[in-house]
Length: 255
Image 1 (spheres, rainbow, N blue to C red):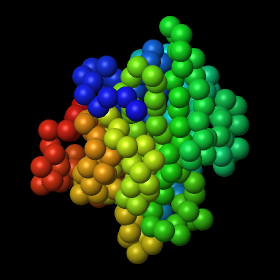
Image 2 (cartoon, rainbow, N blue to C red):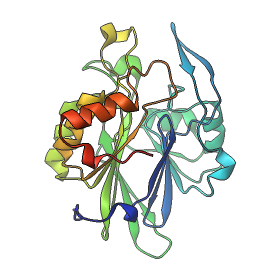
Image 3 (cartoon, rainbow, N blue to C red):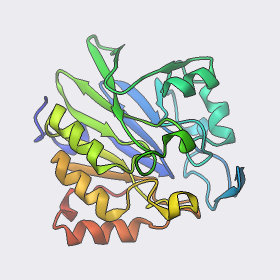
Image 4 (cartoon, helix red, strand yellow):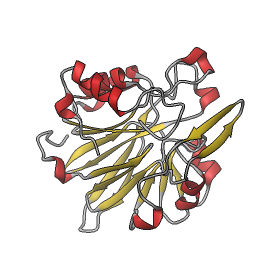
């Protein structure tokens, strides 16, 4: 495990809206859950997901992306229409086993605790390991589908955890038990609730995000998935307030 005392600028992380963030790591550029559409409605069974704002960057302005880290493919707030088109431009998409089967192309399955090694431009490797995640309460997976998180590691770099759409604090405790502290945690928050499961959380809210940060002993927390969709019940302000209440607001990196 790399030291957690490495300066923030060693691992640049930029969030562009919703769950879409660019992580530059070991000379490689990773993009999480690409969502570039403008505002609009997306039917999902009996629900309609409504997007309220476009990404702050267009795909053409991103530059080269070496891999997409896709928590899941079944919901438009994690992979919208232009996000799907973007996948065809990327040499590798790591996602759930079922999602890789649906997407085909350059999509590769990554199950929890499985790893792939990617070559770094200057030599050496970056290891991407699948992290367990649950997009709702216990027993919700048959309805909401598979979800995966990610851990980026390299011999000379701090660790980066990407939660994906995870609502389970218990799974984060399991991750911490296996891995110990992480340096940077990109936490998908927003407190997503829908009529499913009696309105139970489908992603963490601010209070649970702060708990996740403490469980992982993360030195830096980059929140994502906190804006641009009406089914997100919390935004950036609520998350900041929760971290202030927990006494760890100094760990937040907002961009």
